[in-house]
Image (cartoon, rainbow, N blue to C red; front, side):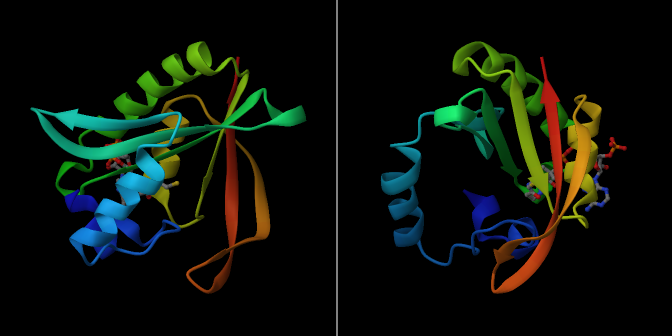
Length: 146
Ligand SMILES: CC(C)(COP(=O)(O)OP(=O)(O)OC[C@H]1O[C@@H](n2cnc3c(N)ncnc32)[C@H](O)[C@@H]1OP(=O)(O)O)[C@@H](O)C(=O)NCCC(=O)NCCS
C-alpha cells in the first residue's frame, strides 16, 4: 500500500496518509474486508492502487459513487483511465445501477481527465460541499448514465 503513505497521493483525498502498519491493518479489517465493492488495481502482480463503488440505498439505489487511487510511480500512463473503464463496465452490470457519480476537488485535474476520458459529464460545482482535513471545500460533481 505504498500509495497510502504518500502525502502527494492523499492531498485531494478525505483520509490522512498512513503512518503505521497498524493503521493500514485496521483499514483492511474495518473497511476493505467488509466493503461490498472494493477492488485492487494490480500491475505485474503488484497492487498499485484501489477502486471502490458505493451503491446508494433507498430512493437512490439506482446510483453508485466511484472512488480511486494509485501510487505516484504509475501516474500518467493511462492506467487509471483503463481501470475506471473496467469498473464502469462491471459496476453497471453487478450493482444494478443506471448512474455512476464521482466527486473531485476542483484542483484535481488528473482525476477530472480520467473521468472525462471515460465519458463522465461535469454536472455541477458543489459549493462548500465537504469538510476535508478541517477545511470547507468545493467539489465538482461528475456523472455517467446508461
Ligand atoms: C488522479 C489519478 C487517479 C490519475 O491516475 P493516472 O493513472 O495518472 O491517470 P491517467 O494516466 O489514466 O490519466 C490522467 C491524465 O491526467 C494527467 N495528470 C495526472 N496527474 C496530473 C497532475 N497532477 N496534473 C496535471 N495532469 C495530471 C495525466 O497526464 C493524464 O493526462 P491525459 O488525460 O492527457 O492523458 C492519480 O493521480 C491518483 O491516484 N491521484 C491521487 C488520488 C486521487 O486524487 N483520486 C481521485 C479522487 S477524486
